[in-house]
Image (cartoon, rainbow, N blue to C red; front, side, top):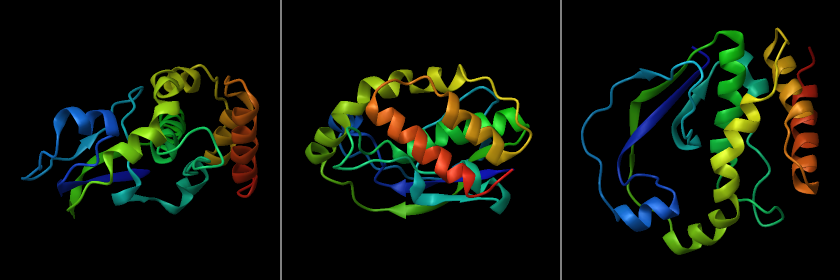
Length: 173
C-alpha cells in the first residue's frame, strides 16, 4: 500500500456547500478499510494521512491560498494526482482506519468564499489528470509527467505545473 487515508469520528470535514446542506451532523461509529478501486478517485484529506517514504514524490500539496485563485483543494487535488500515479504503477491507496476525533468544523461562510472559485474546476480536474498518458516507471517520473502534461490552461495552472515539476525534480529519476 502506498497511502493510508484515515478518517475521523465526530464532526465531518465537509466542503462548505455540503456543510450548508447537511448541517453539523456528527459521525459516530467505526470505519471499515477500503482499497480505492483502480481508476477511481476520492476526496483525500490531509488531517489523517500516512504514506510510504518512497511515494513522497507523488505527495505534493498544491499551491493554494490567498495568492492563488483556489483554496482548500490542495489536499484533494494532491490526492487525485497521487491516485493517478499509484494506479499507473499498480500501487494501492486505502481509506478507512484509523479514525481520529474531529471536534469542530471551520467557519462555513469563510470556507465557501475560499472554495467558490475552485468548485467548477474541481468537477473537471480529475478528467484532465486522467487524460495524461503516463509511461514512467518511477513515482517521481510519473509525477513529473503529470506536471509537464496536465492540460489545464492559464497563468495559474502554468505556475502550478512549474511548482509540481520543481517538486518532482527534488527526487530525481
